[in-house]
Image (cartoon, rainbow, N blue to C red; front, side, top):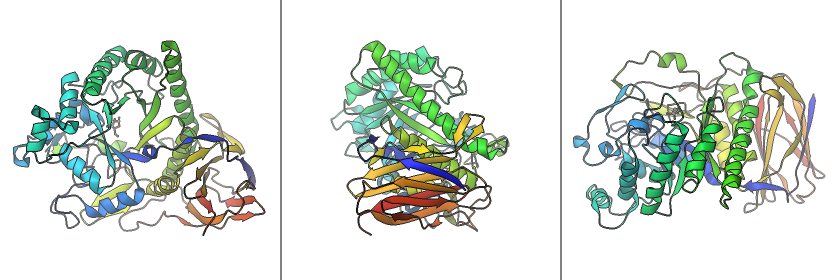
Length: 499
Ligand code: AHR
């Protein structure tokens, strides 16, 4: 059996966890909005048409912020089409996804839905086909209490009080040649600076996310962040990172080693932010918003067959397996390791579209990736401790990959110490130990394991608990934590003073 030792010190803190690191994303895409969160007439729908069964699953996930309305969709979107009387809203082409958008769900419905989902909106403005004026207009509609055209329009639409949305994205993936209104780094940096400047004139309390790269493999990576921040440093609070992984070669060890690439991506973006800060002699640091991350590849082929200009087709409906859940756990651990700088992250997406939750007309169920997200989002609150892992490694296409990914979280409020750990070894268990004598009086409160013999195992509507957590039995004796981490398994161990 392999052995790993984990070292922590309660005084060595990486950073406070911003709860928005457990955010998610709803785009007008496939069945995310329609048939996902909104389905008037469905037996599970409430009086506003919001699916209550889906809301219940989202509430359990404990998602503090949801990005909306896109994604690629936002770069061709007129937000005005989605407000006001529903029977007057136009049906429009959505060029990003080649479909027809009915606009029956829009900005105000999203804000109402967020209240029921107990989450905060993270709104994106269109900097693809639109610009400074439209960014100003939507913010005035959303946040201004005074008498003026756009806030009065909001009041006319039935929303007397401002929505008071604090977090705004300056466009989406503007580095991507696929993006409607794609720009060079300089062109985007300039429009982000000017839109951001005007938005902060309208409401100085908002925070802004500028577009970074759509992945570490983008040819413009690095140069893009440098140029955008050089142009828009003063207006930017966060720079975005997007990354999706797939197991197209069916090589599970390489697939699980993507955490190494993700770690490199985050460290590189931090370095660029700090280099621009130094160059500009600024006090303010730019933090990171990893506002699209997940596994995405299972549905690629099916998506080539989607009928053009159809309404609400099945798009990006990845059915996730057990190895995807292991990577999702590893990705979350990787982001937590950088909690000092990664303040916002959005699992992309939330329902039906590359999502932890799936729906049919008859119900909603949890995909495999729901489970690590649910555990880490609920128990990963507080401070991240610098977690040093002495672990065996293996060779992967990303270089040496550790078999063990682990992180300790200290929740001082609840007097809890929580360990999240993944054993990536597909064949061999690992004995993990950790000296916890600093935590006198702590006991094991809970140990949950996510494991399956078959890395390709999935959950379906008929068999929704095929991959689901079970209880573990680690020990804390004489100040030493010992846990057997079975081959290919994810663990959450909660230690605390009271049981
Ligand atoms: O999440 C799916 C798509 O992935 C988003 O629309 C886009 O931003 C990214 O390319």
